[in-house]
Each structure stands twice: as C-alpha cells, then as structure tokens.
Length: 110
Image (cartoon, rainbow, N blue to C red):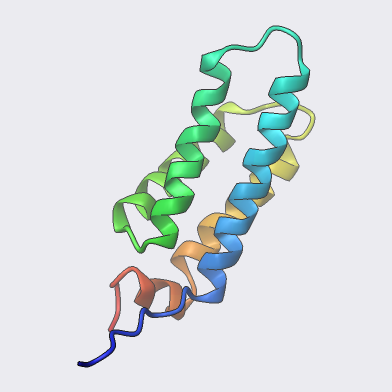
C-alpha cells in the first residue's frame, strides 16, 4: 500500500492564517468584554475563522473571499487603528497572492 503524504502548508499561508486567528481572538475577546454584545458581533469572527480554515485546507475560494473581505474592511474602517488594520490586511493579502509557494499551494502555478 502506498502512503499518501499530505503536502505541508507553505510558510506564507501559515503566517497569514496565524495572523487571522490572532486578530479573530482579539476581536472576540474585545466583543465579549464590551457589555452589550450579541450574535451579530460574533458572526464576522466566525466567518474569518471559516476562511482561515479554508486557506489551511487549500481552498481557492477561501483565498478569494479573504482578499475581498479584507479589502472591504480596509475601505470601510476609519478608526484610530485604521492604519494598523490596513497594514495587517495588506500583509495577509500579500502573503496569499505574492509568494510562489502560496500560489503553488492554491494551484495557480505548478
């Protein structure tokens, strides 16, 4: 019987997923410590957690939607931490779209 070896997740994708998970953890913690919170405040972190899982599992759709949602978040988010969030979003998108190992992971190049 031939063993199937699962390919390793490339470092840029792993770093992008790690950044997303850390941001999600921070936003959930902030949401839960602010008194009036509800299900709608937790929907976005759950969505981004699902996208992070999709990136880890090699989903091209997850890469596309992560890029779209992060660009929309940068455009609509004008708070004091806007520059930091914009830089973080740019880093994640760059890690998913630029390195050859990331493009190979999602099947853009062979």
